[in-house]
Length: 268
Image (tube, rainbow, N blue to C red; front, side, top):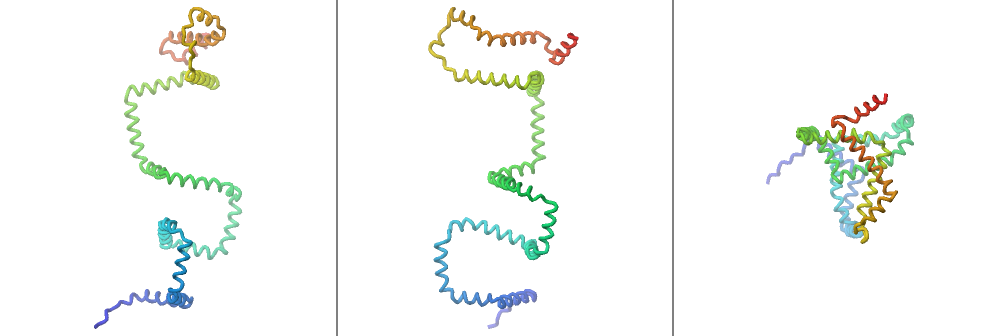
């Protein structure tokens, strides 16, 4: 029977294989592999018992995807030559480390970097949380579709502002903010809002008793008229109603600015 032709491979590959075998022989690794294969029946059962007692197989099974990703990363780094670069950098550390230390001492505030480490840790935790919640992917998608999103928002605003009712709402809000809130001092507005909030809270929590549900009668009305605290409370409201009525009597197109300027001119 004729033997099949076996291609020994390219000369370069054959030389590399011979060189590898020679290196393994010189390092004693071939003898070690041979001894392990010969004593397989002796050490394999003991190794299996040790692994069964100490290894968490569920944890190992969960770690398999990470190991696969790590292997892929190492392969990519090897193909890019970065592993060789890192090995060379570690081997020559004694040469470049002192020079790099001098540069860092001259240009970097080590104390500032040390104080910034907690901030970097928090930023890393925030990035991890955003990644787990899917917000980083959402922001990335928003950034990618920025042009389309802005065009859509522009169309929505155009459709909204083309409606006369919507435009009138915006104009009324503008008039309300510029003519009313701009004339009130912040401390007065805060006092007013606090009083309004307290009164609304009292109204919401108030539960009238049996006597309060009955009509006060003429004597009750007379007592209310003679109540000085009640009149002190109602006086600002009555005066505000007078001012409100006087303002309504003015021309509708007269702005507060023009009225104030007219008042100044009359006083002068």
